[in-house]
Image (cartoon, rainbow, N blue to C red):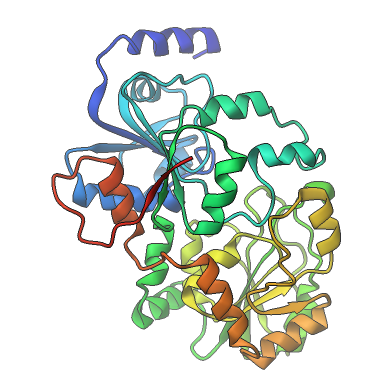
Length: 387
């Protein structure tokens, strides 16, 4: 269906009454079932079963990867246009297309998808390289559609209220996607490791670098084969490239006396990787804030901190307040991992600042605030702020 015909159909559907019992979900630009929207969807099915949830995905392959029984529509299909035109509720961790206008009476729940270390939203006006191609007017239009914004911690509430100026309400609930981490059992972690093919007794390290605008995406600054050789055969290294990068993780050949290296970039559920990993190595990714919920060792590999901070802009000096050891060479990263947990107080302070609401009930708090549940919340309430 061509653009003109598509929008004619969409506008025709907008003449229908608003469906008070329909919620549209999407995540990561319609890539699939993930993140905070997935956690909210699952909890809403329990607490607000009268609300029918439907997921927007872009391709049949993504539809096939949805959990069994999850309803979906394909992007730009007639079913999609009808859902976007008539749904009461919209839940996304990015913005829905600007061509899908907001109807009076509809409710838009924006979850975002990470605690911000790097500058976001309107704050990128001061960082032209990172903001290349960004339309700030269009961003403001999107923010003006939001009714709620989920916050994982006070740090995020403070900076998002400025970076995304609007009249929405900030829900200080914690991140729904982190409920699974907060409630994880040893049995679940063991099952995930088995499903990933990790051998019993292997110490497992997850390496997950972030995207770099100035350098064209994935940048393997960490020498993975060298790291594997230094760690030895008692380790498994899981490599997770950023979802903006589609070129793979590069050469992962390390030799027989080295750690096994596994590219898990295409694994659909990142929380599985968190549960499987005994330690995390990252640079400036927001994954560090989520992984901290598990209270396991984190090593920062930050050889280009000054460049990253200048190009992208950051909200605090990560190297002055790290969640664990800081390394600038592959050897230093290996030493930190082999040391185990050299300074747990760093992580304790980091968790106090960035994980105060991660008690396993964030999704419930969000659902009870946004959807009609017909029951009083059983989990502790959080303040609701006006931004």
